[in-house]
Amino acid sequence: MKILILEDSSQTTYGGGQKISKLVCKALSQRNELLLMDYASDSLFIQDVKGYVQVVYFAGYKFSKEKFIQRFYQAVAFVKSFFKILRILKDQKVDVLYTTTKLTLFLAYFIKVYTRTPFIYHAHMSSKRTISGRISVNFMRFSKLVIAVSNYVKDTIQELNADIKIQVVYNPIEFSVKKKKIALDNDRFDIAFFGTVRAEKGVVTLIEAAKNLISNSNIHFHIFGDGPQLNQLKAHSLDNVTYYGHVENVDSYLDKLVDILVLPSVIPEACPTIILQAMSKGIPVITTNFGGQKELIQDGRNGFLIERNSINQLVDKILILIGNKSLYDNISSNNLIDILKKPTIEEYETLIEKCFEGE
Image (cartoon, rainbow, N blue to C red):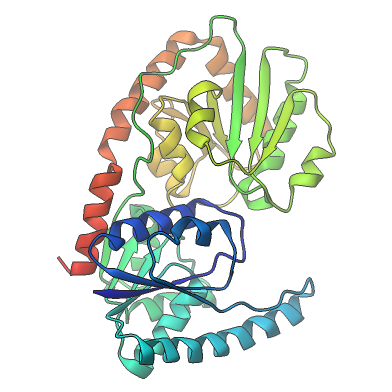
């Protein structure tokens, strides 16, 4: 089977969604011929997947800080992309399109209408009851299949249209499951955030918690990731916070450094891969109480759930974890039990292959 992958790695730093796209490419490359069209030409994502795809097509466009001009550039790029895909389909006998973003979903829909080329949409985000959300779900109706990364994502789609064919495939366990995490004997606790440093991720809440706990010399915070808020956060110059920028060896940091993972997103996440990664190490997680976060974390069992923007709740849960080693130990053990319910990389690859084979 020949599959054309439509991706846009130009808009964000290398986040969880693109990492899942990479795993999908790896899975599909074993039995299929893959082509890739991306709006970036030299992103980390493209560098990572070049070993899995046969041809890479570039459909880039200009950027502007002014919203109106940026929308104009995107509209022009959409039209250019449409005709570029038509040329690709003319040159290559493509069997199916694979799309992961709203922009490429729209493209795949119009290509389907024009050429009848089927498409599969991988839903990494929930669908909202907005005009844009309803339009997106309407386009999903024409897909061969929608792959949802969690039941939460599936439910938000089917609330708008119950007839869409959806298969839930949880993001996989990327790292080998290790023995339970043990609270350090010297009472030092390292608390980490991994992700794109932007407002939606709630990193400001974590920094405010660090300010409240700065007098506790046994607690240190670590921010892993790049993004638009990074320089703003660095301006706080807190002695108990270290910034790392984008890192590749997440596995190593989780193993050797992190005692507690905090993901204080102010928006519902779909299926945060970093939570799965932390669970596979037995690391307790503190996150917000909605969306895919709530689907993965059971309050008091394998972590804690807090209200969005709640600095006080975050501080309280951190102090509870570091002050009760027996509780920490139980939560760590429960994480190692719960993570086994999610697919391994090998199981994930099989599930993805079945989605494309129509089983």
